[in-house]
Length: 199
Image (cartoon, rainbow, N blue to C red):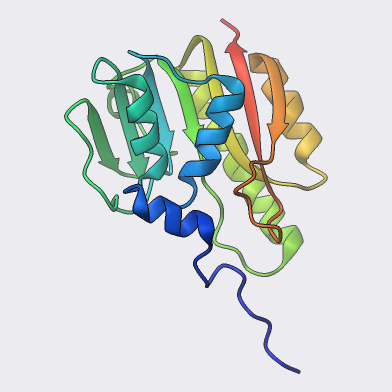
């Protein structure tokens, strides 16, 4: 049986465009589209980026919040690009943050999570792990997010999606799903966008 080609191996239009624009990954265009549709960012906001590596989402958010904004990026892996002085990178487990570490700029107007599990090729397993990551990121947003703030989290489509959406509605006034144009056709990822954090 011939080996299947890896659809992620070859750089596509979005990958090349990201590199040309100075971003380490094509995921920047996903956040850009979500921001355009949901109007996530304003100047002076405080942003928490969970699972930030290689850094594209953090760099994009910083262009939108300006020098008056503050951003905390957290990941186990190092970022591929340096951050400006109004941002701080914490190399740590995003779910092992104590209040002193995570609270550097809290409460956060926007909490982002582009985290995905290391895929196994077993779809139910990967979906379950994605759901767990999403729910843990949402718990961080519920704890550290500002009243009226927003949350964006990646999740793989599965039977658990209604449970994730129900939990979003418990903490936020509105929620919707967005599948950005830059998402690869073979991907099951989708982004949940919640706004209007309840007190």
